[in-house]
Length: 468
Image 1 (cartoon, rainbow, N blue to C red):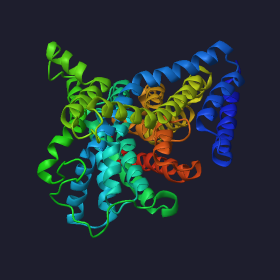
Image 2 (image 1 turned 180 degrees about the horizontal axis):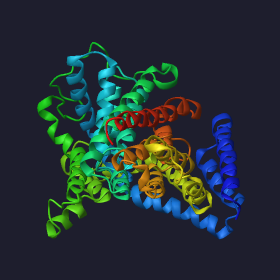
Image 3 (image 1 turned 45 degrees about the vertical axis):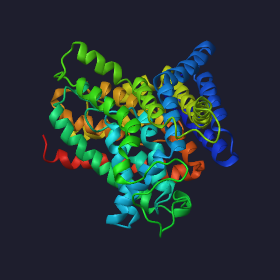
């Protein structure tokens, strides 16, 4: 196998080649990512069987972790959409916000805050899909273009995913550094808020032709109030949205409950109550329960014409699978690429070259935390893996440096936000959802995540002036 430095050079060449293929020649991302994984593995000297195994493990591992839950969530979303439930919620939420202000910024911030909130208990890709249909319906019914609205939603998820306790990434990093959970929560929350604001600033200032699609919402003169959808018979007023919200809120509530049950002091103990919360709070089972309630509540509304209820439901399932399959496959192939990168010498090479014995003060140590996590993120795509690897390396920093553990956790989390590009599954999920070109994705999403991570690190440096 070649050296780590040569592996880094090969990775840079292949990533550049992938950008050219997808961006300039319109090559399928599916074929591009598969080719990149195979070619890179062979170029760095991995055995042929190891390359194939890495691709299969990455693909199957991602699908096994997120694929089924996302597919079930897609079916639930289709049922809610066909029944008119999402339209009812979207019109009600839009009316409540527009009653206070007609500014687009208010709705964009609403989407960002929604993403920020659900990122805490939910894995990134699953959290994105959980409320995506609702976000799209609100965008379509408002004066905000769908692209800007969805990007703001994703920016909220991205900002909180690696910084706010007790997400998996932040908790793993806090354990590696033996950081105080309370101080880590405070520092990470401040850094995440700064990241969220900076990401929204970039998304909002971009050229509308690149970031904002043509509005397809309701007429400006339309009234949002207590009304009835003519096709479904579902009321859209404030008094009638509780039932449509159940299939959406239930999975989220179960994930939050599981997050609370997993806290170090075990508020629900370790007996049968904890076991059932762990079981019901698994993303796949939470998605199944949401689907079950959607079927229970809206079985009659999705029947069209003389079609039977079973046929209508089967149609919803098929439509959801058709929508979700391209996104799932491309995201899983991005995970395959990441798995091949991890199997090579690059990760160990970066870990060895970090000069942990000659760090000039705590700011230098924080900068190394940030840079190392950013390198791992850019190389293999996963923010969680970047956090775990960077925390493992930097936790060995000599005590003489006096690196504050909570600040180190936040610096690593900030680095893991820089930046989402073609080897990040969420990049392709967004690209497929919005239909943006590679150029527009780089200008909007990749640039926004780079700004988010950099601004979060600057916030950590400011807090380092007061926290020792």
